[in-house]
Image (tube, rainbow, N blue to C red):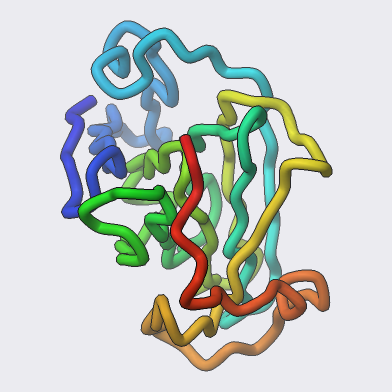
Length: 183
């Protein structure tokens, strides 16, 4: 596992080289010892799988507030997605900036999104699946979201939006008075 820092502090890509042979491939999906530089003393509290069938569909942009703020470690285990992190951390040098990476089954990389950043993705291949490792359990009272088309963030999605949930469409636009999330 090779940890690569992105332009947003704390948002990392973990490049993973699978062992490949005629049967397919094998890779270590998680190793606390190797990921310690970015995970620190956090523990994985919850693991989720998300499947999205339609190309162009968007899920996100989601986050959790304190005291349930979470780091997410995300891998694409089937298909291909365009995965996005948005920095919402109060006082951050990259506040309201976004960074995206293509994740795929073949690439085997993992996207690491720290507390205080929103996360979402757009499906690039049908029936794509993501594996999420979370450092906090889900809390409905702490959940939040930013609209996928928020003008203060201006994410440049690679495809036209083909599907998005009513919940994700109803996230409010950020207001100029929003100063960020405390982490």
